[in-house]
Image 1 (tube, rainbow, N blue to C red):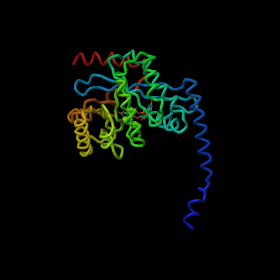
Image 2: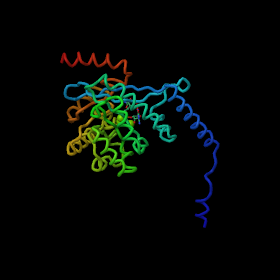
Image 3: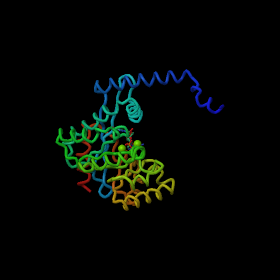
Image 4: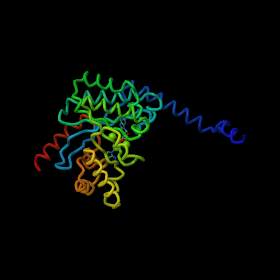
Length: 279
Ligand code: C2E
Ligand code: MG
Ligand code: MG
Ligand code: MG
């Protein structure tokens, strides 16, 4: 009886809950306006082959510079967008922009992050397909990046959608690999093309001997599944050297370049072309 009462009793009210809820609502309203007002933009970060350090892909990352709030962390923006249903608008904005930009870099793979709520959207695959056609984008130029949370929550429909996307020619990467609880088992159940090893492992390279061992084991698993491997968050030459020795295929991180706007990318890539040509 006592237990029952406890369960039914309302959650204790605290004043901060009200302000939190209010702040959340206000943030949501600002985001809604921001999308319409064109305050969102995309930056791209290069991904290079460890063999010759040539750039072979770009990851698109959303940015929101709000006149009121300043630069809003993308993770916060995505979290609020997911909870408020604005994720479809944000996701479509990003996909559209990447499709629009794709003609600039016909030889580069363009990676786009797709959040759990986006993939759960039943119309996601068909809207994606329509968008690609509208912009005349070869699906093989596009890769989507998913984290394992997206796959574990609702495995069967997620696996079906990945299959549909891959049938279109889009490739799929598992992002932030190694940070979840069941990274390895996600690999068994889902059709994937690439693993992106989370930057926390990369950051420990050189200081924590276990980091190299873990990366080595991730690479072994990837090889068994015929997946290529990207290391994220590479900031130093030492890390890059170790990653090369550990047989990873690609690196991404501040060592190579910070994410940048499309206008700066042309200049960056031209410089890279000269550099790799000279080597
Ligand atoms: P992510 O997909 O794992 O993206 C990599 C993050 O690492 C980016 O942060 C990037 O700026 C940062 N990064 C890259 N190189 C380095 C490095 O050498 N050192 C360090 N410390 N950081 C590095 P960002 O742009 O803040 O994005 C954070 C997360 O927000 C992303 O993680 C992704 O999960 C999400 N996100 C960003 N853009 C989008 C988007 O357009 N759609 C969705 N659904 N999620 C997005
Ligand atoms: Mg990513
Ligand atoms: Mg990541
Ligand atoms: Mg992440």
